Image 1: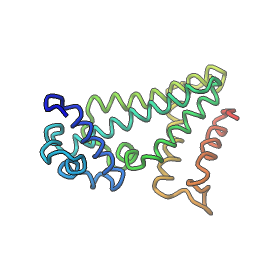
Image 2: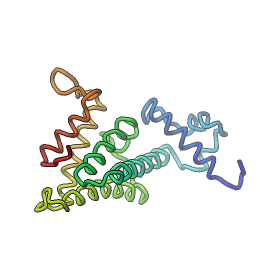
Image 3: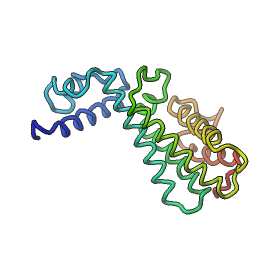
Image 4: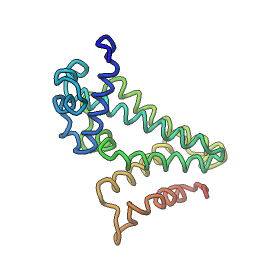
Length: 199
């Protein structure tokens, strides 16, 4: 690892921070602990991030960028716009449930206090990815009279509700469908309620 190239060290620090976050939430992420987990010097994380908030903000930025990429990749694999919308929505839920602590970092009860321009752009990319698949489905006549931005927001609200309730353990029998086994059905039912025929 060349001392003149900070990229590998920074990548190692971020990877270690992501693992610590997923194992124990934001409280488990400290710059000193990240350095130890990454196998670098204790001072190395401080050369890349001013403090823990800066490190968590970078993780949130990565999370949103990866979420947008996952939505777009899943939707692009299917030609039919309605089924493509469903695939993009399913990808959103899957990403959230596979990385619950990352999802909570972004969308939990304690929003990041001072978002960076990079974080704002990543957030825009995530919403743009949803808007794109909604707009494509509208091109086939689905909810064509409704404004795309507002309709995309409603779709996101539904997806976020499903993901958040499942992550926090509120989706379970007998009161609701069991999120651990039937979350896909909830996505399908939400889209059906919105008039999407993605069968």
